[in-house]
Image (cartoon, rainbow, N blue to C red; front, side, top):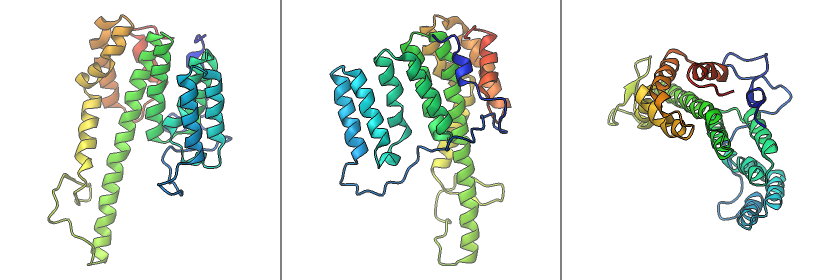
Length: 266
């Protein structure tokens, strides 16, 4: 059933500079939402999600899927995060509708292209394939999830630098703004402004670990073991780490080609 797995996920031939397919007919969405409802009230969409959970616990999987679809069509569905929308593919899988579940994952991948959602979706694809016992194919998405997490943290670092420079400009213009002289400095922007965002070091640390041979090895070791390819973990980690360090943007085709040198996943 997954003989065309890679083609389902493959971007079209018309791509942007990051290697992501252009989808002009689809509204681009993000999982980062702002709620306009009161925090003390439970949205209608989330009430429906709870009902879907109960149906799942009762093993009424088809009904649970329909309840999820109702939630996604609710008037306040815009408040839902992508992780809540990722429930439908997994419920479809439980209902024995594996192809439909995989299609739903791919549709989410096209709709939610922000770096935060992309990392979550890639990881869920890995989980989906492992539940199908497609362990070799899952390796590709295990590594792809790391790539998306790296892109996410690169954006976090860039945002921290941009915000630091913006605040420096504002402080130069408005004397009443808080000064950073007494705050701990975690780095400097290319413009020489001190970065006091405590998360900056965390992002850099995560990037260093994610790109390292040891970091890649640790992330893929369990998946390689499930695929009965544990002996190939080290050479694959070496090649993937080199790829992550040498490239600034990642492509699924390139990741697949590296893996194919060690494991035939398609």
